[in-house]
Image: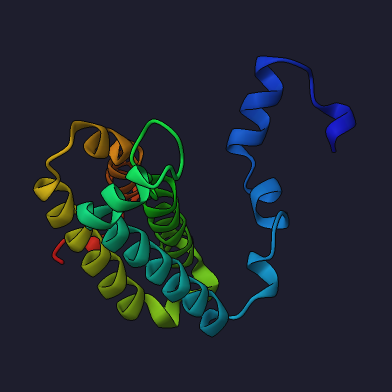
Length: 156
């Protein structure tokens, strides 16, 4: 398939729009719903751990003063944001998968609960750098919701 793909921008468009490519990559098709939801739970647990660490300014100050991680207070912002973003990607992928239509209500509830909790948390953030780290997560959430042109989510 790649031999027929032109280079440059056209190749990028091919990969960005190719459902076949997306569906064939990774472990998604080899994992059951229970396994994927367990993975989501683990990602959320990782997010919550990082979030708790990032909120514990006293502990971070102690580590910083002890010389851990150089000139800035240690943080787990990357873990906090990447883990929740990955959980959202899996949940939205499951929700849009017609082969998993029997689980739509469960998936919808989980997506809405996670989105609500994420937005509630975001509005409490005091640090501009912390809010900036969350920009990509917010864009992901809103973009995924906007792409759901579906009666299943209109009156949630």
